[in-house]
Image (cartoon, rainbow, N blue to C red; front, side, top):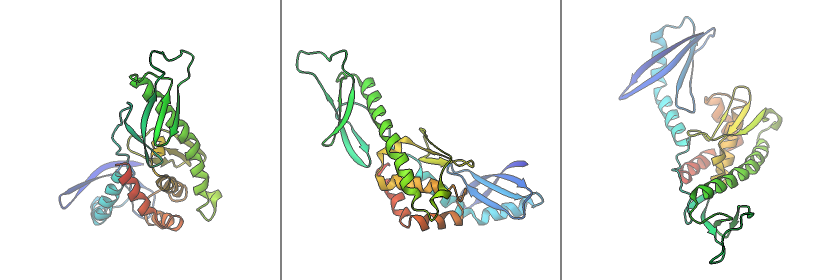
Length: 247
C-alpha cells in the first residue's frame, strides 16, 4: 500500500488529500468526519488524472467538510456555579445548591446528591462555594443519565431499519470526544459522546441513527445518504436543530 499527500487548487480553496493506491478498478473519494479527504485509486492511475477527478468533485468535498464542521460539538464550556444554566435533553436547568439552616454545617456523613426540581439541577451535600465539588457531582449525574438514556435510544433507533439485526453494533462505548458526537469503527464498534445527553431527544436519535447507518455503509457516499433518508426522512431538520441548540 502506497500513501501520498497531494493537493489541488479550486478557486480560492486548497484541497489537501491523502492518496492511497490499491489493487482496484475505480477511484473513490471520501471525506472523514474530521474533514480529511482520502482518495483510493488504482495503482496504475496517473497522478494528473487523479488530481483532475478530485478537482471535479471539489464542490462536493467542500460541502462535506462544511457539513461535518457543523456536526461537531461547539458548545462552549459551562461554569459550575450556583445560578449557571445547563442543558439536559434540550431543556435549560439552573444549578441550585441547597444549604443547611443558618449556623449549621453540612454533616460529614451527608452524601452529595443531584436531582431535577422544577427547572433546577438541585445539588445537596456540598458547600455553596465549592465549585470543584459542584462540577464533580453534576458531571457524575450527567454521566449516569447518559449511561441509561443513550443505550436505550440505540435500541429504539435500530427498529427504524428494515432488518434491525443488521445494525447491531459489536459494542457501545461512551467517550468524551472534542470534535465528534459519535463514531463507528470498521469492526462495528460504536462510540457516542456522553455530552449528547444535553441535546434534544430527536437530535440524539439523529446522531445514533447516523452512526447505525455506518454499520451498513462505512463512507459518506450516495448510498449512505439514501439509506439515512430511508430510515429517517427528516434527518436534515434534526441535524439543523442539533447545530442550533448545541451551538
